[in-house]
Image 1: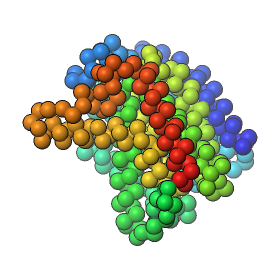
Image 2 (image 1 turned 60 degrees about the vertical axis):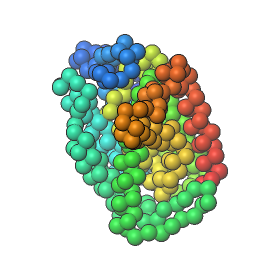
Image 3 (image 1 turned 90 degrees about the horizontal axis):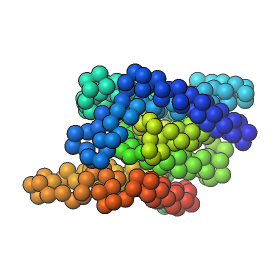
Image 4 (image 1 turned 180 degrees about the vertical axis):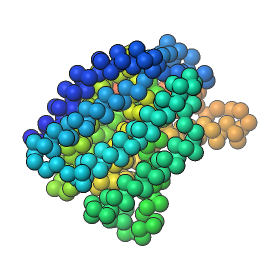
Length: 327
C-alpha cells in the first residue's frame, strides 16, 4: 500500500508544482482555447483560456510511476502499469496533435475525423494485442452484476475491444465541456478502479494500481487549476489521455462493460448527442434537448457549472458503488 501512496503523493505534488509554470508558458505561447461558433454564447468569456493543460497531469503520472517502480525495485516496461500508461499517452499525443492543429489553424477543427479514428483504432489494437501476448488478459468478456464470463474467439474479442476503447475515449472527450467536469467525474471513476484493484474481486491480480493512484493524484492537483472558473483547460490532450486511461484500466481486468455503469455520465453525454442528431434529422429541425452534449442542456436550464459538476460526480459515485458490488 505504501508504494501506491507514493504514486499518489508524487503525482499530486509534481502536478501542483508544474501547473503554474505550464499555464504561464501556454499563455505566453498563446495556446488559447477557441470557443465553438455554435457553442453556448455564455462560454465566450472563456475564449483563449490556455488549453493543452492535460500535460500537467500526464507528466506527473509518468514521474510518479517511474519513481514508485524505482523505489519498489521492479522497473519494467512490461508491467501492466506502464502498458496502460503507454496507451493513455498515445491517445494524449493524438489529442495534442489535434490541439496543436486547431491552434495553428485558429479554429475549432483539428485532425479530420478519419485521421483521428484510424490513429485510435491502431492504438487500441496494439494495446489489446500486447496485453494478451504478455498474458494479462484472455479473449473473454466479463459481464458485471450477473457475474458471467463469456469466452470468445480472439478476432471477435479484438474487434470488440477496438470498438469499446475508441467509444470510451471519445465519450470521455465529449464530457470535457465545462470547467472541472471531466476531471471530477474521472477522479470518481478512478476511485472505483482503485477499490476494485485493492479490496475488490480483482485484488491480488496483476493490475495497474500504481497507475490508478498516480492518475488520481495528478487529477486532484489539476482540478485545483481546472475547477470553475478554470485557469486552464485540459484540451483534447487531456481528455483523450483520460479516455485511454479509463479504457486501459477497464481492459486490464477484462471488465470493459463496467464502464457502462461506472461511466454513466460518459454514456449520457454520448447518447444525448446521438439522440439529438437523430431526432433533428427525423423531425426536420426540431431538437430533443436544448443543447448537447447533455451538460449544455442543464446549463440552459440555469444550472451552474459547479452544480452540474457536483451532481454528475455524485451520480458517478452512486453508480460506482453499485458496480463495485456487481463485480
